[in-house]
Amino acid sequence: MDNGLNLNIDSRGATPVFQQLVDQIHFAINTGDLTVGDRLPSIRALASEHQLATNTVAKALRQLEFRGLLIARDRSGYVVANADDNRYRSRGVSSDKTEVHRVVDSMDLGALPGAFCKVTEDYLSGDPDACNVIHADGSGTKSIIAYLSYKETGDASVFKGISQDSIVMNLDDLLCIGTTGRILISNTVNRNALNVPGEVVAALIEGSEEFLALLRDQGIQIYSGGGETADVGDLTGTVVVDSSAVAIMKKTEVIANSIRPDMSIVGLSSTGQCAYEKTENSGVGSNGLTNARHDMLHTDYGRDYPETFDGNINPSLVYCGPWHLGDPLPNSSLTVGQALLSPTRTYAPFIHLLLNNMRSEVAGIIHCSGGAQTKCLKFGRDIHFVKDNLFPLPPLFSAIQQGSQTNWEEMYRVFNMGHRMEVYVPHHLVGEVIEMAREFDIDAQRVGYTEATNNGSKLSLTDPAGREFTYQ
Image (tube, rainbow, N blue to C red):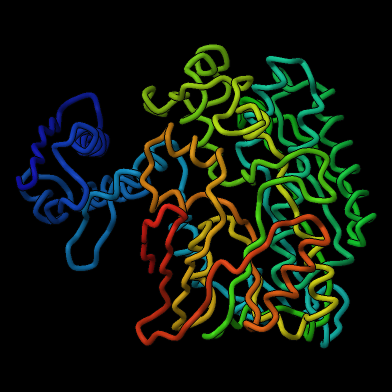
């Protein structure tokens, strides 16, 4: 076989043939016998050489594709995926949710297909001039870091920030279509009651109510619609915190993300302490935390808290970092734990002011969450996004890169790297946007611009160290 793929399939062995294929190809990738870009023999060739059914081979290769170890290429068959993406997929994480978008992108895209969130007709009240939006998201595995902190300190209040994370991941997506008021939020807490007692649930509920009250004080009409707490010990070892949000708005007020050439991109910093935050923010948000906690945190956490990770993960990828939560974060005033648990910043007060002043001038708003700095590629058509004036790299993301050795190109695809929201406006309005952000002590700057291209959209990114990357 080519590319160092030597399979030894025992059709009469105790292990199913399908699993033998998966295990042996996975082993070849882990040991370097197969390297990034290597092409596997075709399904038909593998089946013929080992006297296997083609559907058995196809099933095994699809499983390896799901793990992120292989990529299906139309004409080349399967090739070995990028090594950094392997690290993510081996932990059960997709950095860009390709397999999800493959399905979702073929579905009904709603009343305004270009919008950041799916917008539907107004099914709730039947107003032809209105539309509905419903959104669901959560704090992700950040709740596990809160769990580790709780186990070490006994302080359940750390979970109040997790409530904020869950809400903001919904709210700030809604901001991108222009929703800034009359939003109803519902929370779902799935917990293992043996590990997560009632005081944690109480902190989550209190944190949610306190954060919603803070937003209302800032002029954002957002309210609690109740929620659900489920004891699902068979599904989770710790706790999962999710939320959903629903709103009705006028179609004429929707930001359709009709991003055009010759516009400025204004980035809103994810770090520092803005006017409505109680503490300094590391900028972490709620994306990429599975890899961040494993690549930063010490093996002690895997030994002491096995309920916090999937036992199927390769042990070498479980809590393999140098730090404990209480250790100082290099080049920062925060500890590692404080940085990883910084509640996700919402930009709602600023976006509310922005849209009150220049809604008709704002062509697009992008929440740099899943896909991070490459999220812009999902919007506009034949747009060359140029990001050449990014914020200085926050210490947390530098530490994550140091701990994981993830290449910088992938870091900008997974983490916000300094700004988590960007606004697309005509060049002459950049100064006004920056001044409005300063009213909330949010750092803002022109991070780039757009121009026309005829070959499909692409992103050219130059980081603060002068490294240049292209994404398409």
